[in-house]
Image 1 (cartoon, helix red, strand yellow):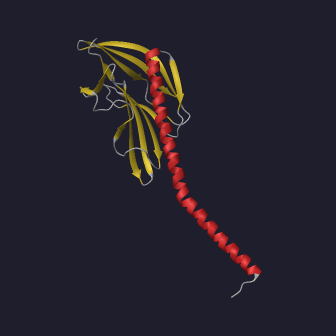
Image 2 (tube, one colour; image 1 turned 30 degrees about the horizontal axis):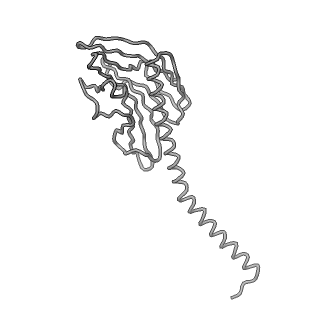
Image 3 (spheres, helix red, strand yellow; image 1 turned 180 degrees about the horizontal axis):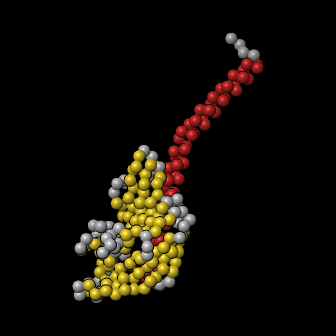
Length: 215
């Protein structure tokens, strides 16, 4: 059967349209998940970098005095709360952010800093490190799968005591202030509130207090 010129042109148009639909469908099927994956990776890397910068600023304020601030750059929630008890408070800074995928192993505390619980000592339910060897902070992340293509990622900063057995003079960054929370574009303010020296069982604990507020 022969087709007229008009029929051939119409058939060609139909074939080209079918090919284009197939190509577009394939690009959408494979491209959208890849774009989302790259978006999640970038978001988690930005979140981790933000928490590292926040820790650096807190340490600087604790050691050098003064005041500093940082803006929350990611669409998550930063909370500042007591995870200890009323008699023995332990303030923690947490960034919670949800993504469709994750770059971390799930359902486990993953250390992002030098310290891990296995490298620290424990006394009275509290972990502590060694002055000159360990960092003054525990920086961890925990990724929890909530359902298919939905993960909750929690980054935490918890400051620990560093013991110096040579001088018996120990040090700790103490976070103070009322519990607070804020999201993207809110400002975290850190202000030095001075050092407090406390005798503890023949040793001396120097706590550098940094007040945290979120506005």
